[in-house]
Structure formats: structure tokens, C-alpha cells
Length: 398
Image (cartoon, rainbow, N blue to C red; front, side, top):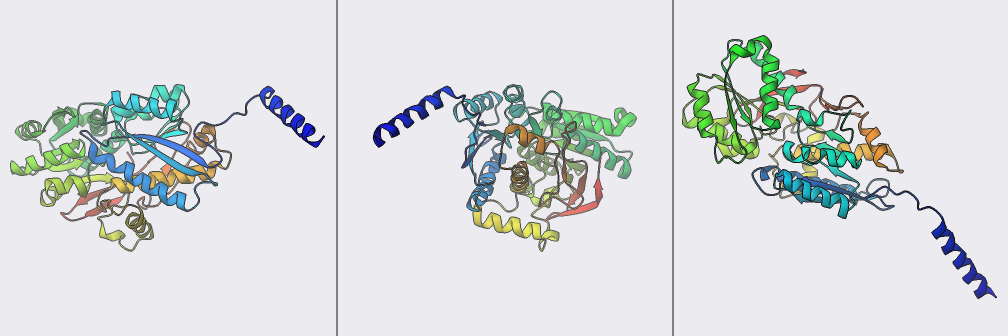
């Protein structure tokens, strides 16, 4: 009798399960896992930035060892897109449609990441902390699911314009820029920042394609034009080439460099540290090569994490700091969103975030609002002295 009753109960339970509507489940989230994907330039012309995948994995490893987020462990799935938009589309679709990830986190590159923004937004898949400062990702109205992470290139170059006007108002400015949305933001920004003086002050504009073997001819053209202040809106490889070529020409203009390339390692070490002396950039982070942070708690915590979880990582590479800050901020946002994790809930948390993450410079923090996805309202100017960075004044906005 007991057996018949149990069998009947089991049958009724199965029928009830079939008849009941399936409970809604957030893709990539289970009781024990959060599946996070990314596209990274592990090969190709921008492979120097591929370290972000490894350092992010190192952060998630530490996080998982500590119990994860509300009992859920992070599964990290970075895929190589070789910094090529067509490959980014292919890998992103694979992550969303085959792997079923919860989100795309820290993808790299302006052209690569913008190639999938409409696709991800149409599917309401978070594309959070895009590693680009392009204006293309500053569009919460049309692309609410795409949240950038880096300071805007346009705002950064406006800050350089402020600095030039204050320190060298009669400068003859030349711009080396990558011929895409990334590089053209620097060109737009410097002109906007110089205002009605731009037409007179910007005397040479030299673009390059990311596939060009060198930028030597562009540097020669800038020197020939009589430029005495150069803005480099270029990636690490091309920035190193530009620094070396200027040294070869015995040409010593004042140089302002995109913060994404102004790394002691690999950019300056590839060019020669002595050749990089005097370069000016804006920053939001505590540079690991700057001895002023040697006894700083943030730096000490970051250093301990690197040595334990990413011992092969380059301690002089700022990309490892940017990745650490991004992953820490995501951890903070996931915790704030709570145990009932949904894509909508995380978006709400991130779009109202006001967070001073570890390893940000004093006075700088990440601030978002539903109508403003520009995370950094101020940046810190600094100059390279041949071995380390020295800060210039207080953080300023554009």
C-alpha cells in the first residue's frame, strides 16, 4: 500500500511539474555559479593588452577561494578576438548563445567592442566595463546595457588642452592619432579644449592605421611641420615607435600621451626609459612604479595579490592595476545587488554607483548615473622623470 501511495505521489508530482510554468532563471547564474565572458586581444596587434585576461582571472581566483559572491563562484571565460571586430562578433555570439554567460565583462578595444553593442543591447546582455574611453560607449539612452570603465579619450585630451594653454599658450601642436574612433576622439578633444585657438595652434594632424608596420613617416611629418608639442593618441606599440623615432631624429617636443599607453612597461621599456623622460599623461590610478605609494595600503594589498595569484605578471604594467580595479568594482557591485542576482538588478546598481575603488588616486573615484556613463569626472596629471611618475598639481576635470 505504501509503495502504491509513493508511486502515485511521484506521478502527481511529475504531472504538476509539467503543468506548472517554468521558473524564470537568469542566464549564466545558478545557486553556485556566475558565468562571465569576455573578448580579449590575446593575439594580434594589441596583444600587449591581453594581460587583462590573466590578471582578471587572478582576481576571480582569489575571490572564489574566499567563497565567491553570496555563495556563487565566478567562472571566467575570456576568448581571443585578436582585436578584430569580425572575430569579436563571432566570439561574443558564442559566449552568449552557446556558453550562456551572465554578462560580457571588460572587453577591449573601441572598434572591437562597438561591433557588438547593438547585438548585446538588443538581447539585454550586460556589456560592462568596456576597456575603452570612446564616446561610442557614453550613450545610456540608446545603449543602456553598455557601461564603460575607462576615462573618456575626448575628456582626457580636453584636459591636455587646458594644460597646454596654461603652460605653453603659444605652442605649435601636432597630433598622432589612430585612424578610428579611438584616435579621432583625441583629435576632437584637443581641438575642443583649445577652443577658438585650435585653428592656429594645431598645425599638423597625422593619422595611422593599426595595421601599419611603423609610424616613422608620421613622426617625420610632425617634426617637419615645426611642431613643438605632440599629442599621441596611439596604442602602446605605436607610442613606443613614436618615442624611439623622435629620439632618432634628436627631436625633443613636449609630449602628451594617451593614458592607456603611458605605461612604464611595456611602452617606455620598449622605447627606452631615457627616451620617455618628460612625457606627460593623465591618470586615475596609483602607478605601481611610483615609489610614493610604496607604503600605501592599497598598493601593499595589490602587490600581495599579484605575488600570490599572478606571480608571472609584470609589476610595472598598469594594465594589471586597471584590471584589478575593474574586477574589484564588479565584486562590489555584485555584492550590493544582493543574493537575488539578475541582469536588471546589476545594471541598476552600476548605473547609480559612487565608489572609490582601491588603487585609484586620491580625489578620483568611479561615479555613474542613469544619464551619465562617464565614470571619471576628474583625472590626475603626471610627468615621467626617467624612472617614475611625478604628480602635477591636484586632480582636474575637463
